[in-house]
Image (spheres, helix red, strand yellow):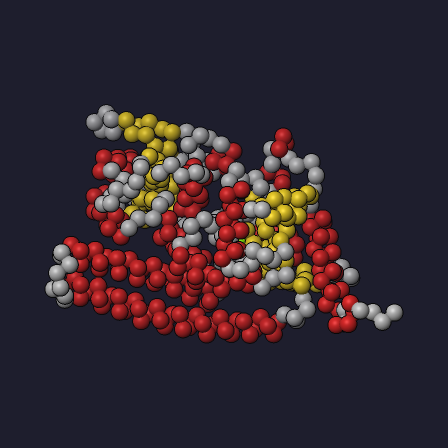
Amino acid sequence: MPPTEANNKNGVAAPCHTAAPDGRALVSTVLPVQGEGVPVLLVGVDFGAEGFDAELLELGLLARSAGLNPAAALTCKRQAPDAALFVGSGKADEIGELAQLHGAREIIFDQALSPAQQRNLERRLGLPVYDRTMLILEIFAQRARSHEGKLQVELARLQYLSTRLVRRWTHLERQRGGIGARGGPGERQIELDRRMIGDTLRRTRERLVRVQRQRATQRRQRQRRDTYKVSLVGYTNAGKSTLFNALVKARAYAADQLFATLDTTTRRLYLGEVAGSVSLSDTVGFIRDLPHGLINAFKATLQEAADADLLLHVVDAASLDHPQQMAQVQQVLEEIGAAELPQILVFNKLDAFAPGVRPTVGRDHYELLGREYERLFVSAQTGEGLDALRDELAARAAGHAQRHSEPADAAHPSS
Ligand SMILES: Nc1nc2c(ncn2[C@@H]2O[C@H](COP(=O)(O)OP(=O)(O)OP(=O)(O)O)[C@@H](O)[C@H]2O)c(=O)[nH]1
Ligand SMILES: [Mg+2]
């Protein structure tokens, strides 16, 4: 991985050559120790997809966000995943040696492993092996605060677990040649596990629906129908909560972690006499390949974004990966039916731009996936550009208020 602006930020060093006890060279990237946490080895397999480096970098951030301590990263190239081990057997042994060398107690793969691959790797390496999906589920489980959030995470975990069991079950079926001898001890156990998970899943889903209904009622009561609603959306770590805090002078949790925010927070933002107050919501961040269970579970949270009159799409403009991140966000917005809402692109972290690439104007237009958007450059941290953003919000809110205060026949004034 070439040292770039972005991966320097995360402290990725150049490739490191170490010798195995028998003298063979082991190539990995040693990551500087940062803080506490269980030391882990990151593994990324490059199947030739674009943006591989950025993805591995993101895996490191995800691991840190889960409270782990990535000690080293290993990458390798393959045409296709190995059915049994995901990587070749030689590479698997190299992973084991590197884990030992760096004192890693867990291995984290960037790509999704099948239950069989995970089990085979664990058996071969004698260490717990996780993949990106499990890591994201773990972060969500650690972060969920509200009752609703916890239920959503529980639901996603159960859904994930149930697919694993189903697959493990089919796998066993196949192993026994698919002959109709049902009721072996393994199968009975799995059947029981499945039934138990199925029951818990149903109960959790019912509880979630109840909580969501209550919440929707509360929301309706809280918000007058004519309030102009603005939602902050954007890739995780883009700076949504920092911007939210800067605008409403609140103290939502903002941190250099992925998924620092899981629950939606809403505050009133006063924009002057003409525009009055608008409601501003801070929401959960987006990420590429969000586990499917989580997409469904978090749709309700994201749906609050779809309820808005205006989306502020916050972009970490200092990240080299921001074009891909914006496209990801846009894709999820489409999935929740919010892609057609008015949207302003807020290019954040202006203070972190290198002097040579700093924009010379405060605002312009930007084309994203065939649509043109208003773009404003800001730094939520230093406050630069926030007055212009407030003015823009005030103008839009005032326009909205005017449209809604006009009587129905205002379009045809009598004289
Ligand atoms: N340099 C710089 N850093 C910023 C700026 N805004 C936010 N950050 C940092 O970026 C990191 C992420 O900020 P958050 O506000 O938590 O980001 P978020 O979009 O709410 O992230 P999630 O809740 O995880 O989706 C934090 O370390 C912030 O201090 C900015 O304008 N400049
Ligand atoms: Mg946040």
